[in-house]
Structures are given as C-alpha cells and as structure tokens.
Length: 302
Image (cartoon, rainbow, N blue to C red):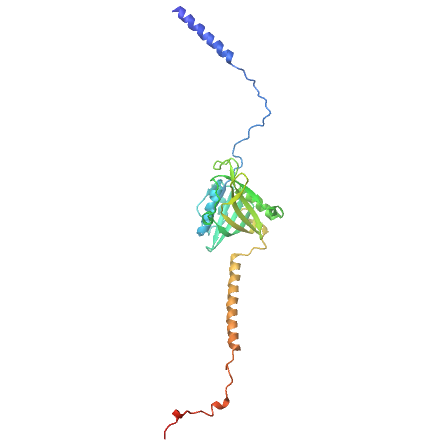
C-alpha cells in the first residue's frame, strides 16, 4: 500500500509541473493604439408623449397613430377633455416621465391644430395642420422597418430666419430618435424631410431603398402652418406671430361672402335684364281699336 501512495504522489507532482510550464503570464497593462470602445448606454433620454383632445376626426386619429409608429421613443395617453386647461398637459407629461410633447387639438370637428412643446422650460409652437394624408390612405410603395431610426433633412431656409431656427431645433429634439434607445433598431432606413414653401412647413417621409440612396415615399404627409411660437410650454410670452396666418373661420367667412356676392350678382343681373326688356316687341297701330274688321261669317242676321 505504501508503494502505491508514493507512485500517486509522483504522478500528481509531474502533472502540476506540466501545468505550470504551459501557463503564460500576461502583463498587467496592455498598451494598444486602438481607440477605446464606445459606450452603448442610452444617454439621450428623450421621451415624447403623443395624444389628443376628444372630438378629433378619423383622419386625424390615423395621423396620430402613424406618428406613434414612426417614433419608437413615443408614449401613448388617453384623450383629454377639450374643456380642460392646457396646463394640465404639462402635468400629464411629468407623470408619464416625458420631456417632449406632440398634442393634437380638434376644434369644431373640422380644424386640427398641432402643439409641439418642450415640457421642461419651453419653447412651444402651435401649428394648423393642413392637407393631411395618412399611410393607409396614400397606398405608396415605400416601406420601412418598425423601430428604425430616421434621418432628419431640413431645407436651407431653416437657417436664414430666427423663428425657423427655433422650429428646426424643436423638430430635431422631438422627431429624432435617441441613439441606443431600447425600442429602436440599430439601423437607419428612412428619412424625415422638412421643407418650407409658401410660409408653411411641408413634411414628407421617404424610405431608402438601395445603396444608391434612392428614395421612395412612405407617408404620412401633411402641411404645418405656423400660428405662434411661445417662450414657455404650451403658453407664456409670444416669441413670434405669423403675419401670413389666416384662421379657418376667417377663410370660411370669406368663402361665404364670395358665394353671397355671386348670388347677389346673379339676382341683380336678372333684375336689370328684365328692366331693359321692351314691353312691346313691335309697334301697334292706334286705329286697330277703332276699326274692327268683321268677317262674312261674323255678321248677325236681323
């Protein structure tokens, strides 16, 4: 029994010597010229709350849902009562842990307004939404993957005047999906394009189809007519008022006046035509009433 124990001890010592020979000691500090790895932590924590008031039309509701699909960093909220004060929107955003807001306001079940606001300190902007076409309505051939991050493309006119610069920065912070967002995908396959024409902002969404960067429109598409820019969130001192803005009520009033003047013009033209008409189409002989011609069959027998 003693000899077996001695043989086992020698085998274990030989194995330990082989292990120590194969061990390579690494230096404590590795020096390399490669740049350090980038942090993949979600730093830009932008959250956008998208909701509306009660009474919006079906087209406006589809537009709101399209915006939620295109913005993975957005959150949902039930509709707000139209009679409530807009200061409640700031409280709702704070409870939902959102620092940006897209708020749709419906009036008279005809007009649609969009509020873009920075909840913390402002600014905020109010727009009249015109020429709305949703993704389901257009039936365009473009397509993008859900949760992909968009590129933001702006017209050169955004850098010329101060109020366009404010709106450009507001669009970047709201519509730009933060990098490494948990619900976003790590690739870019569509473009948000903002252009200025006729003192309005035209929004288009294009998909990048191939390596040559050819674009195909996806939708939705709409036009934003600026109304006011406020210093605070959904209110406060006014920074800019659009002098070219015309409210929908004024526009409908002008249309009614235009149609009324057309009707009154037709009525006055008809009256003038009747007044200018001759009462007699040809001259009458005054002796026709004195001399009455009697035919042979009309003579009465005495």
